[in-house]
Length: 161
Image (tube, rainbow, N blue to C red; front, side, top):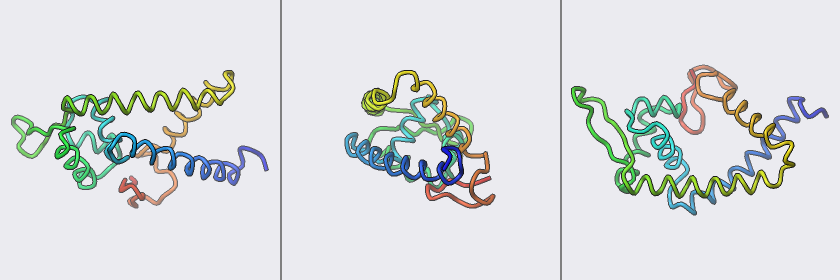
C-alpha cells in the first residue's frame, strides 16, 4: 500500500493518536493538570489577557464547554477572571503568577520531549516532519469543515461549522 493512500494515512494517524494519547496522559499526570486545562492554560499564555469568547474561538470550543475548565483553573489559582469595563457580560482571562509558573513548567517539559522525539528522527527529515505536523494541524483546524457534518460536535465538544 502506498504511504499516501487514504487507508495507509488513516492507519498512521491511528498509530499516532494512540502514541500521543499515552504521551499526553503522562504530561497531564506530571504537571498536575488535565489536558483540557493544559490547552486553556497555554492558549491564555500565548494570547495574553483575552476574553473568554476569543479563547473559545481560538480553541474551537463552545463557551459552555470551556467555562468548566476555566472555573477549575480559577479555583486552582492558575487563571484570573475579571469583568471587562463597560461590558458586564464579558470576562477577561489572564494567568496568575502560579499560572505563569505552570505554563513555564509545561513548556519546559514539552520542549524536552520534542527534542527527545526529534532526536529519534534523522536530522535531514526533522524540518519535513515539523512542516507536516503544521500542515495537518492547519488542515484539521476548526472552521475547515473536515471529516464531520456541519453543526456536529467532536468528542472534545468542538462544534463543526
